Length: 411
Image 1 (cartoon, rainbow, N blue to C red):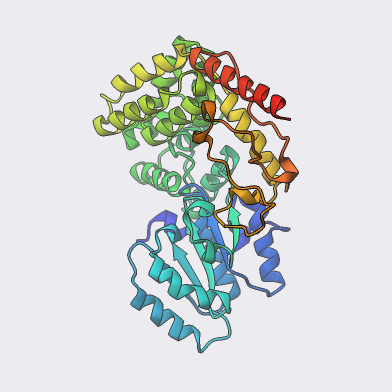
Image 2: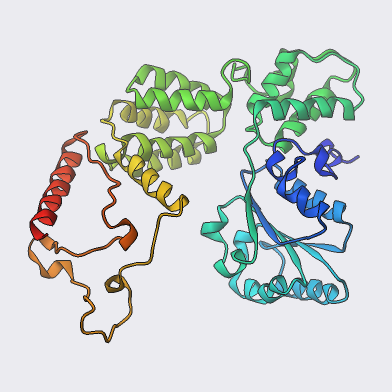
C-alpha cells in the first residue's frame, strides 16, 4: 500500500496549494504551459513546500519525454544517456534534484544542452541558487522562489487527506490545529502524521489526546489559532529584542518542547545578527556554539546551552544598525541603482596617464586616503547610520565620523 503522501501528490497545477504566483490562474508556469513555450527554470524554497510536486505536475501536464537526475547520487554516465535519448525528441524535460550539489564537470557537460534547448531543465534546491548554482547554468534559467506555506494551506491539505482516505469518523478541529503546529509547515510531515493518527484509530472519533498519544508528542498549545509555531518563534525574537528575559525563556520553553531544534537554531542566529549586531558582535559565535551544542546533546539536555544563550541575548545591549544598513543597500540594488566600479578599483592596468590609480590605504596616515569607492551613480550614498549602543559601536561611530571629517577636508 502506497503512503498517503505519495498517493496525494498532485498531478496538475489545480491541485497545488500555496504557490498561486507560479501555478495559479495567472501564474507564470501555468502561462508557460498554456502558451506551449517551455523554458528551463529553477525552483527553490524550504523543504516540503512543493518543489518536487510542481516539477512532477509540470512533467505530467506537458506530456513529453522526461527524466529525473539527482545531483547528489547520479553520475555523468546517467546524464549522457539522458542526453542521447533527448536527441531523438523535439523536447525533453530533465528534473535535476538538489541542483546545488551538482559537480562542476557535470554542470559543464549539461550546459550546452540546456542552452540549445535539447534539454528543458527544472532544477530543485533548498539553497538560494544565486549563491549555490553555477552562474553559467543560472543564466540559462528562470529562477522562482516558492512561498512558505501558511496555516490555511496546511488545513486545506488536511481536508483533502480526509476525503482521499474516504474517512467518516469525526476529527476534532483542535486535532487539525495540532497537526499543523507540529508539522514545521512541511507537507510530507503533515500528511504522514495525519495518516498515522487515523490509522491507529480506525472508525473512531479522534480527539487531541488521541492524536498526541499516537504521535508520542506532548500536548503543547502551539497551534494555528492560538500560538502557532511561527508566532511563537516571533514571540521569542520580540522578547529578546525587547530585553524581556522572562518572556524569552517562556517562548524558548515552548519551542524546546515542540522539538524542532533546527528552526529554533536558525532563528536564534538571525536574532544575534539582526537585533544585537554591533552592540555585542561576539554574540554570533557564542550563539553558534550554543546551538551546535544543543543539536549534539538533543532533547532534553538541549535546554542547557539554549537557556544560557537566550538569557545572555535578552540582557545584551541591542543594535540593528548593520541590519538597516544592508537593507538600505539591497533596496538600491533591487531598484536598479548601481553602476560599474571606478576603474582604479578594478584589477586591470590602464595605459592612460590621466587615469587615477588605486591608492593603497596602508601607505597613508591612519590607514585612510581620500578616493572614490562607490560607482559614480552612487558616490554620495550613505547606508550605515552608527548608534551609541555599546562602547564598541560608539568607537565605530567615532571612526565613522572622523572619516567623514577627513573627506570634507580633502574636498
